[in-house]
Amino acid sequence: MKKVILSLSVLWCIIGIILWQVFFADTNYYLMSVFVLILSMIPFFVSFEHSKPTARELSLISSLIAIAVVSRALFYLIPQVKPIGAVVVVSGVCLGAKKGYLIGAFSAFISNFIFGQGIWTPFQMVGLGLIGLLSGWIFSKIKINRFNLAIVGFILTFAVYGIIVDSCSVLMLSSDFTLSSVLTVYGAGVPFNLIFGATTGLFLFLFGEQFVSKINRLVIKYGIGGECYGQ
Image: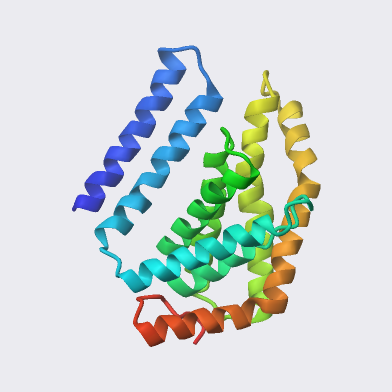
């Protein structure tokens, strides 16, 4: 019941912000989107807090976030060639959808202390969070192998993450929001999203199964409460 009340409260807050921006203020789509994204993350954080995670579980989650941050920082000088998406996919596969979302969101937030915080941070947090969330859900339905990991990882990073983060660019760069201007911004982001998606797919194809196996071994050995999909 508490989860339902929280979800409804967040939903009403989001609706309220949208109505206020549209009807009672000079509409700022950029600011409105940021507020909506931040509010959308609250149920995941609150749900995790109420689950009362153990010290071992927190240690594993923190370690995966650290690995994701380092994997992004190591390739600092090469735009979009970042294995962070692959780490988030594996996190969602091994620990489940909700924890995958948290690991993705926090990985984006913390790594941006290196790459630069900004109004784009909530978009990246939600984008990587959804990669973890959807990976956990998808691989609860299908079997793990290097091909599935690579294909799912590519699609999620190219399409889901790409669309969400490029939406930030649309709000920053477009003023009239015509179909032509919006499509131009999204089109300009396609090459970068392809590189990010291909990098994620390649790392998952080469190392994904081994990474999943090692994390699942820890989950089973220490009873951390992961999903252990594909075992």
